[in-house]
Structures are given as structure tokens and as C-alpha cells.
Amino acid sequence: MRHIAVIDIGKTNAKVALVARESLTEVAVMRRPNAVLKGPPYPHYDIEGLWDFILDALRRFQAQFGVDAISMTTHGASAVLLDDEGKLAAPALDYEFDGPDGLAAEYDAARPPFAETGSPRLPLGLNLGAQLFWLFRTVPGLLERTRTILTYPQYWAFRLSGVAVNEVTSLGCHTDLWDPEAGRYSTLVEREGWAVLMAPVVRASDRLGPVLPQIASATGLAPATPVICGIHDSNASLYAHLVARDEPFAVVSTGTWVISMAMGGAKVTLDPARDTLVNVNAHGDAVPSARFMGGREFERLIGDARNAHAAADVDAVLARGVMLLPAVENQSGPFQGRKAEWTVDAATLAPAERFVVVSFYLALMTATGLEIVGAQGPVLVEGPFAQNAAYLDMLAASTGRPVEAVAGTGTSVGAALLDADGRPPSTDRANPRPRHEAALRRYASAWQARL
Image (cartoon, rainbow, N blue to C red; front, side, top):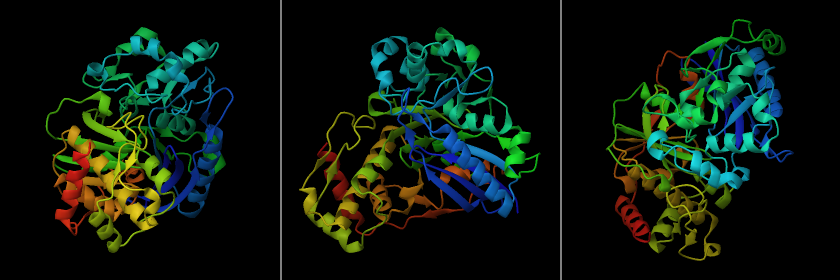
């Protein structure tokens, strides 16, 4: 059986998963928190800590199972700057750092319009262009010593193969750096003089070459083990279905971010003020998308609890009409600037009831995103929320469309599919019609009316 090792770096957690090519299931996983180093010179990713973790995982997987290829997927809004020796020209800035906001007015004057890039203007470093703009103006000598700008998944591919490339799913992820309709770098890249620093753009599924000799020596991997270019994480979730389904359909990728992506939906005018954007899929096509920080909200409100409720708890919440109104994380998402509000004193809720209310809130936020990007057809839910029955039931009731939960972690399987001849997974499972569907719809209508 062939195995594909997938380096899967989310904003909160990092993992390396070993995916069996035939079954497209994870046969082994290693995880670690993706901690941010506070600095100096600014909050940044623990690149060397992650690298040691990746090498250890590859070494263990090779010894126990054998690794036949390596693919990768990471969160967006991140890049790595390399010097002329291929080393870090500066630490990889954490996109939640507010430093770039200090040059917001200057950046706003320089950035391309939404009509060109499909990128909404976001705070902090969520626009990768804003990060680069701030870094090159505030870090002494950085522009002069930077030779290459790499999107984040492709940085890890470079560490493994020595080949420096970029790829469109990360470039097209609200960066301000890519024109999705024209399929080229944006006018910002040209005006700022960054074009000569950007690595060549290749396809997510391209094989960059074998692992470097020192990687083979350190891990026991065969010297010919191929390294796949890699893909942005929510697009990895989408890719597993691009090769399997006829349009229209929508994919909801859940993790720290909840990303709703509409394939073949209704034509709509996207509103950047509601955190809609144009993603770019692995085929280079524009994908209307909406997002909010649902996983972060769940973590803040619930913590580590998973599916901690019973049918009676759902009944109790519906009977009382207890609601959480947006937005818990209000610097992004469709209700930016709005302060979260409970309709009852949250302290009076039992933990299981709180879980249900929060799950309903997250489902209704997702339904809002699906509506504003014109999604049609079945809704496929990837990631942790696919295991949350209360979330799935409310999502189905509020959208009035079939909801299918996708077993396993969509990002790792999607990235593995880049080297699996495009054969889709067979892990979708239709969510049954929700119990008390009429009551759930009334709840959804009441929630929407309060907004």
C-alpha cells in the first residue's frame, strides 16, 4: 500500500498525517500546537520548531509504514522571505499581529481595488500584501536582502526539495497579490517592485523533485521520494470534491476559520465588508467564498468539549429559544463590528445547553456565509464541525438543503489527492433530516429577525 505523508499546518495546530493512497484514510497522525513566538522582532511562527517536528514525523512514518510521497497544506495569509542563501531573511510574521495596522492608511492608498483581486480589506496581517508592505518599510535592510518570496505551503516544499515555487490557491487567498480573473500577479506586486522576488507559479499537484539528500539521510526516506507542490488548506478541502462532483455544491471547511465555498452557485455581487472574497481553486478558477473565525469562537466559548449534549438539551434550547447573536470574533466575518449578545444570562445555562446554543450560532453564521456567496446544491462539511450533530441539523434546517458530513480531516486527504491521480474519497455521509426540523427553522428565522 502506498502512503502519502501530508504536512498540515493549521493556525492553531500542526500535524503530519500519513494517508493511505488506496483508501484515502489517515493511518497515522502526529500533532503539536502551532505556537507563535512572541519575538523579537515581532510575533512570528516557530519555523524551526515545526521543522524539527516534521522531520521527526517523517522519520517515524518511514520506519513504521514507508513514505512514498510528501504533500503539504497550510493556513493562508502567510509567506516566507528567503535571502540569497535560501535562509530566512526575516522571521515569518504571525498574521494576527497588529503591526501592519500602523501603516493602514498608506497601504489602503496602495492596494488594488476589490474588483481586481477579490480580496476584502482585512485587519492585522490578514491581507498578505499588508504584511509585506509593513515588513519592507519597517525592518531595516529587509528588501535588499530578500531574494525570494514564497507562499507558506511552498516554503515547506522548498525545505524538503530545494525547489522554490509559488501556487495560486495561497496567492488567491485574500492576499491583494493576485488577479484571479487574469491569472497573474496584481498591480500591487508590480508597483512595489516585488515581482522579481516572487517565485515561479506552478500547479498544486506538480512534483517539484525528490527530497534533498540531507533530508533522505536524516529521515531514512528513499532518495527518490517525490515532493508535491502543495495547497492552501481550505482549498485542499475543496479539491477532494472538485474531482468527484457535478456543480452546484458548496464546501464548508471548518477549523480555526470556517470557509464556505460555492461551486456553480447563483451569480451574486460579493460584499467585501461582510468578509466575502474570491478564493482561487487548484485549477486556477475563481471561487466565491465567505469566512468567519468559527473554530476560534468555539474554542473561546466551549473549550475542549466535543458533542457534549443529548436530545433533551436540544429540546430545552428550542423550547426556551435561547440564542447567541453575532459576533464573538468581530474583526472578521459577515457581522464585523457587532458585539456578541446572549438572549439570556449565559451563566444560567447547563454546559450541554451552552454547547447546543453555540453550535446553533455557528451553523447560522455558516448559513449566512453560504447565502451571501450564492451557494446552491448540497453542502459538504469538512473538519471538526462535521462531527457536531447540533451544528449539522441547524445548518440543514436553516439552508433547506442537504448537508453531508465528510469523515476524517478534509485538508490532509485533499492534499494527499494531489498525488493520488485525482481519485476522490468515498467518505461523504448524508446527514439525516433533522429531528424537529420545523422548530429548527423557526429558531433560525427568529435568529435572523433579531439581526
